View 1 (tube, rainbow, N blue to C red):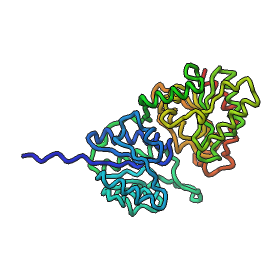
View 2 (cartoon, rainbow, N blue to C red; view 1 turned 60 degrees about the vertical axis):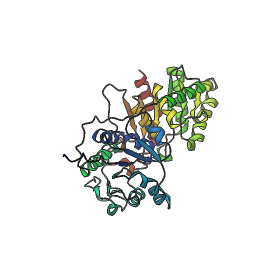
View 3 (cartoon, rainbow, N blue to C red; view 1 turned 90 degrees about the vertical axis):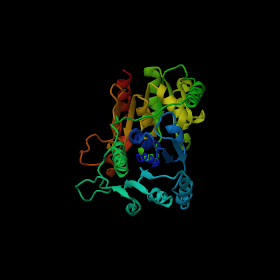
View 4 (cartoon, one colour; view 1 turned 45 degrees about the vertical axis):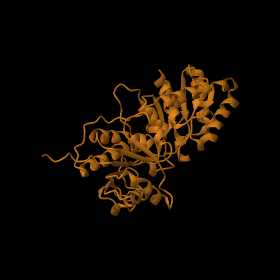
Length: 366
């Protein structure tokens, strides 16, 4: 009598903290899904990640929890124990995620050896570092998070003695039926359900990454008058004031444009609805923040403004035939062996001129 087939491993993926980083982790989730077709794959992330990943078949369940507080790791670990997990892939670099999966008793724990957590990992990677010069503040090689996460996913498969499937490196998101209906409701409130529109995304988790609000307001006027588009301004709940200030500036400087601008933060936008809204946009103009990655996954043309963050940290895979992304940096003359993050004054985002952004939009809209 032949031995029974081994039980497929039950795998936990600790998602990155930020929405955009989780989108950049979708090629890794696809790698695991295709390599472990019979396994249960559970993802854990912060609030909004379930809505983000609904609509694609990458994981079986998303648990929303936050392990960053003092009592967070034991509380989250207690939630994980009933899943009887065999392995955990830690995409964030934090100590809290490592102690959480250790407390949960997960035997295989894979991640990067950072934040003094190496002793808690059973399989670890060394993040690539630059050789020179020694005085750099971080010393880490500026590689895309897409490749960074994929390397960790391949190590997890090695730890489980599972061959890695051949997958196409692309960002994946989907919109399910409830999210599609929610997006249509938001667009109807904005008066843009049957009209072409541009999305403007002026926020960012770091204020230093935000292009000046008055320039976004001027850009909204440009999109309205030059291209005949409605302008929808998007932001997180914490960025509602930023969104409103841009809308008010447009109304003050160009009263005739007032009915052509809408604030999504006032119309019940959610992460799930945002995916459906983004998918219908003609173009997005954005700082380096999460919706930029949603636009890339949805195949929407995008102008992205970087400063003082180096764009190489978030280089996105290009799908054949997809609308292209135009990346504008604060200092294009920065040598390739330098990293923009280490030159906050030289690479201030306000050094990106309005004329350059408008010209990039005009090229994309053709």
